Length: 154
Image 1 (spheres, rainbow, N blue to C red):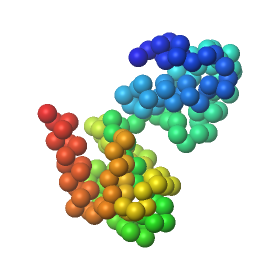
Image 2: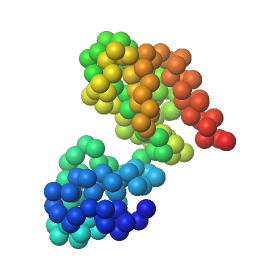
Image 3: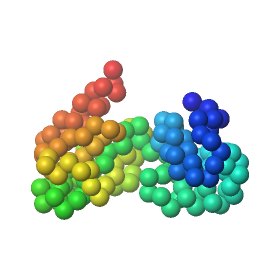
Image 4: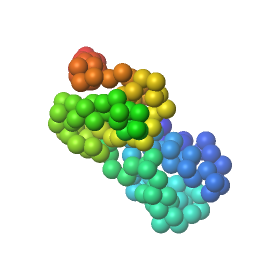
């Protein structure tokens, strides 16, 4: 979907800024906002580029750099920490050969942590894109990543 198609779904009112940025970011295969996107949004909403850029760079839900095709978020809430989130995160770093907030060289995975996924009953947990995985062990993490890689190679 083009930026103009996305913009046309919203009234050109400043209070729609966050929703528009979210929709634009979701439309990119690399899950990020480009300078061109920010300029188009600024023009559409009759806002300064600096205001739009300021919001996009301040809010942690927006990304100005390309990210992986699959976004992995590991919960680092106290409940998940107590149940082994550090071990899960370490295993993901080892498997993917990246650190937090990095993307694999093939562009498939970006690894992040998040404050809470709201699934404390299945701690430790992570989400890949929109799918939640819980009661994780290093072995389960390995199996999950291998399954994603198998799907991609088909």
